[in-house]
Length: 214
Image 1 (cartoon, helix red, strand yellow):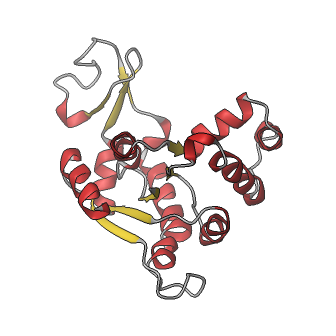
Image 2 (cartoon, one colour):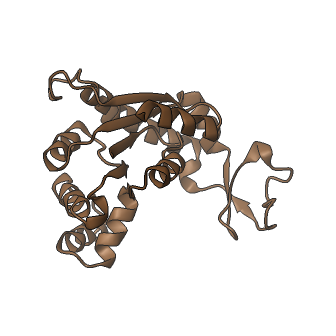
């Protein structure tokens, strides 16, 4: 199965994608992993991406699309894949349809106020890398698993989260219309979109995703 996961920051895409990809036995391909792999293996497109990153610039769409094309041509993607973090824009989605048409798109929806609570309350252990919500910690500075110090990531500050959510709504949310067949660039009569309520327990979201895909 060829899948895409959509959803705003904090919706749990990464967690759910890892579980679903293991269940379906297809590779989970995140944008970050794809970049790191291409750069590590010094592929031509990886070296080109590295040139932009080293200069502190955004990697152009054309390079990102070439990287996706390169990754999806690998042997482990012949029976399917799960893309997490790509496409981010309608233009990228149109390009992906020319490379490999995804069969289903899972949109994990969570209200902005819940996302703010999730992300601003998120804490990471610097020792074991465990992730916790501050409301579940008896001591907001100590990891309950290993006793290490927990901290808040810079990108989990309220101002940064608002910026990320605004970018998602402006750039990525239009993909919902594209994949539901309501966008002028979408394929006529085609609806690949599966909407899942992500504002519940992770195990319930997982079951809902599998049910939607069935």
